[in-house]
Length: 162
Image 1 (spheres, one colour):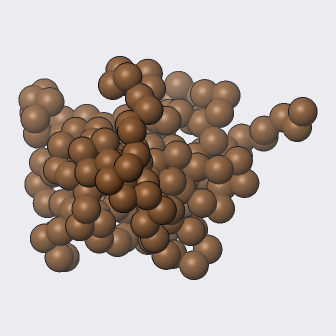
Image 2 (cartoon, helix red, strand yellow):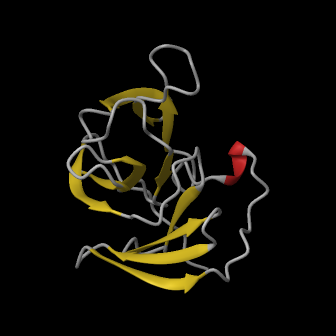
Image 3 (cartoon, helix red, strand yellow):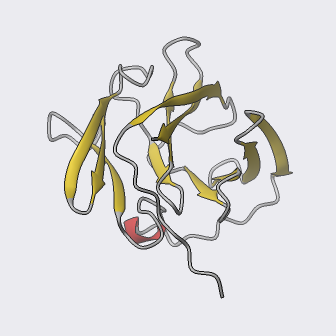
C-alpha cells in the first residue's frame, strides 16, 4: 500500500471558476470528492441525483450520471471531505454574523493554525451564497460552491495551493 503524502501548501489562489446550473442552492447539497492523484474531482449532487466529473488540467465539467445516483452520505458533517487525508489541512465555511443561513467565509487551516480566509466576494460569489466546501486528499485543491456573481448561476470556484 502506498502512503499518501500531503503537501506543504501555505497559500491558495483561484485556479478556476465555472457554472454548474444543475447545482441546487442548499447547504451541502453538493460535495466534491477527489481522486488520489488529484487530477479529477467528482461532484455528487444529492438533490438532482447527479454525478459530474471535473477534470482539473483541462478545466472541463462533464455529466457522468443523471437522475440515477443514490446519494451515499448520511448527512452528518463528518461525512464531507473538508480535511486532507491525514488532517494536516482543514477547510470550513463560516458566517461573519453568526447566522448559519448567511455563510460568507471560507477558512483554511494547516496543523491547527488559520492560514487564509476568503470572503464570498473574494471568490466571486454573491453575498451569503456559499453552500459547500471540499478539499482534496493532499490539501492542494479546495472547491467551494455558491451563486456566482459574474453569471448569477450556481457554480464552483477551485482554489489551488502553493
